[in-house]
Image (cartoon, rainbow, N blue to C red; front, side, top):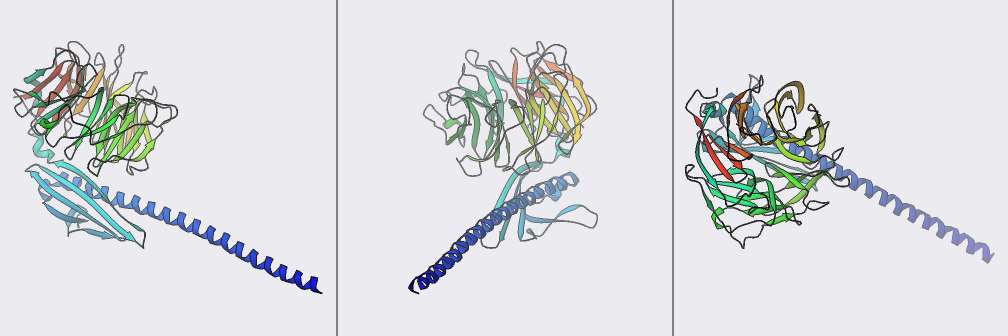
Length: 479
């Protein structure tokens, strides 16, 4: 009888333990599912926030295209009027617990700075904010400011000691930044406030290896450097003349994989994109958050099928266009509408196998410059829409490699820096009906980098040993 009583007690304990264990398992499972669901909702909330923020910038572009004067300074919301046209309205736009505002700052009579910001709060945890910025010009008025580039004139130049093999050139304010191979200083800074007499500043400053593409954001210079260490570096250029031999980066970042992989760089708002050499085990495209001064934070990375080397990147709207060495996809389009979740969107196969070296996009045009070789087309204009390169293309045999390319903001001229003697600088049509040659300039060395500045209608071209500045001719402007 005592044995039976003990057995009944043990069964009760087992039942209670079973209930307890089941309860613990059920609770853990519920919490896991709840956490996963909450993470999914948080991610979805951010995706929608990014979409609303980008929409605000697109609305501003639409208003600009209709009437630039309607982009009045201040903090605004927006709506669609009775005619189906976007207009500014109120101080923000509220929908589905999202508040979006468009902040407009006037820079000149024909240029504004835009800051779009969306904030949201859903429940206790799901809250956040996104911010994007850009500058817009009144392209109708600026078109008349673009001179006749079929007849350019050299207005100034600067030559550096030795043959440093200059690479990319970028102008910000009164200063030109020029990267170079390791045979030079890596980075040269030139005061171009007086374009007839450019002069080098900060001559003691140098990098420890060859530098390639670069971008400036909020007085910070970002560039990729081959020095066996952190390839991406950020420098404070609030006062470019203050850089010296003792200057160290504000921040740096090492791209995974073999050393010196980073080659290409582009910026969209406060996001930086880095393109790298192909690697079978590592990604080729990276996105970084640079919204905080001196901070570089990885957002996403993308391993592209075929592991192509990315030589150049250009970002337009929701897409990043990549010039690559992939034989069947010299031009690759990446959807970057969510910079923390990039994905391959489309591609274009150019004739033959020669690498894509330079890329630009303007309106519905996709422009590709390629490595030279035989009688091939090194300059390609492909017309498409929605990030899709189309099938109607216009091509030109440049004669040799197109090292770099730039296009004015209105889409009149394409400026090509090439290796072809005696046409190292070629200026061609950027219209969607042809790629005819407007003119060329015989440079003293190969042209290696090019930058067109619409603000002063000047062209800056880097060569193997220096930089040359050109102004447009007095003929009929682009209209």
